[in-house]
Length: 100
Image (cartoon, rainbow, N blue to C red):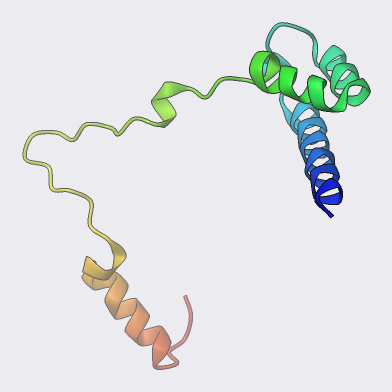
């Protein structure tokens, strides 16, 4: 039973790696052309996938994880439940009013 689970996990990792290589834009692939990475991952399921994750996969841009600074005195963003317009629209929809 454990062997089946390990085999399924390896298969899932291999398929994920293949799909990740195939869907990564050519200009974001590191160290080798995309076609070479496809061959490596397809021919060497575990080792190729690990190499792809460590050496070929694009790095996440740091600015996507940073929080944009707010101007001095600018109020913090409010959630939809703090927005009076959203609450009015929600109430109208719940009562069966016509959609926009």
